View 1: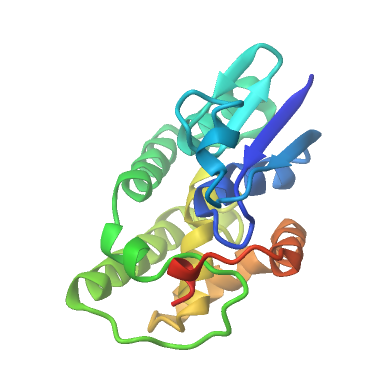
View 2: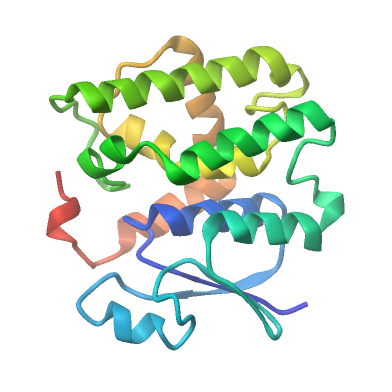
Amino acid sequence: MSLTLIIGNKNYSSWSFRPWLAMKVLGLSFSEIVVPLDDDFKRAILKHSPAGQVPVLHDGDTTVWDSLAILEYLAERFPDADLWPREQVARAYARCVAAEMHSGFLPLRRACPMNMRRPPKAIVLHEDVRANVARIDALWSGCRARFGNGGPFLFGRFTAADAMYAPIVSRFASYAMPVSPEAWSYMNTLRDLPAWAEWDTAARAESWTMPRNEV
């Protein structure tokens, strides 16, 4: 096994955070390459993927270049890791939740870019952003109520769905979002992971700055 994950700046690259966190929580051995999200990014990332985006997973001769596709690939590559719930209904629900994150919540993403170094502080939220926050809060609470009996994560134990929402947890903390106590409890579960602390420490040590992400 020779896994290499190409990622962007840890402070800002929300999409990179998702598969990286999952691979760390699963205890997979992999190397990482950080490609700074700067003016030279496009030229640099094209060396690793013609899609020109991060993250990118290399597994020998296999290249996977989308965060959710990487999680699906890892779930098939390492079936004993149970990266999706075993029970059929829970697994379908987890995939819906992950897919909604993958394709949605654009107002929130645009207004509140991930910035691990940002001191927690609330900002004025437009109605569409507040709607995103409310929907995510409801998703988390619903998953926990229906499927969370086996542990503190969305589906009890850690799954790909948790990995997909990790950057949202970071955003909610950085922008002091008004969420329910249940949501804050779930957020603390993710932020208490050793893998989270490892990423956060590395993000804060980076020297790169992206002014457009410094809200």
